[in-house]
Amino acid sequence: MEQQSNVDLGGEYPVLVPPFMKEIIEQISLCARKSRLVDQQSGVSARFSMANYRTMVASARHRGVRLDEKPAVPRISDLAHLPTSSLGKLELDMMGSQQMTEKQVLEAIIAEAIGIVFNEYVEKSGLEAIVSVFNKGVRVEVGDMLPSEHYAERLKRAPAAWAKAFEVNPDENLAVRASCLEFVLAGLYATDRISRSQKHGRMTYEIR
Image (cartoon, rainbow, N blue to C red; front, side, top):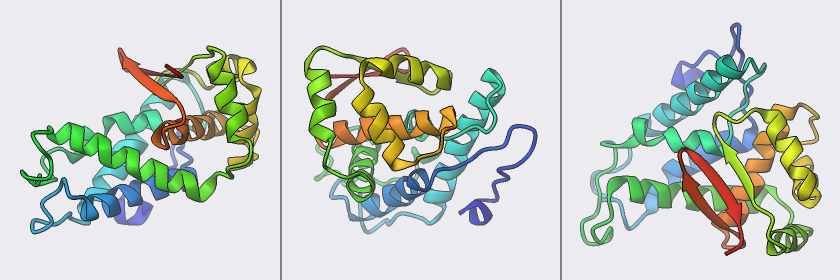
């Protein structure tokens, strides 16, 4: 996808893209092509995936530069910037979308894609242990501009989630672990196990 998107992942602030993040970008396009919310006669261009991939990488690199993190590793929270590359590229089905905005349709498609990739990558065993921690009132805040160290510190309150992130990728690099953790939390949300709220560019996972 790097070659197709003409994206350089090297340089002074290199970007390391986890396989599951690449798959999510690809799955977003697949979900859009099948969605009843999107006008299938108009289709979804191959450039849709490439534009989204470039946006995700750019968001991660921006974080790397701002926080001096090397390598920068894309996270689920970077996908919040996809409307900048996606809006105008999806033709809504006026009957199926039922007055949803293009951004709302895109968010629904992204959530579906995350859920599909989550079910592919993450073993079901141990998920209930994570949910039980959230049932006790634990809340975890994530965001595209939060340092990776933030995740390690906050997840001391939810070690089961940190352990599940380690199962996704055993790399000890904190940026990789932060990405895996967001993937696990977003997957739990996408599969209706926990709740999520958003404020000022940050997302909070909890049970309400």
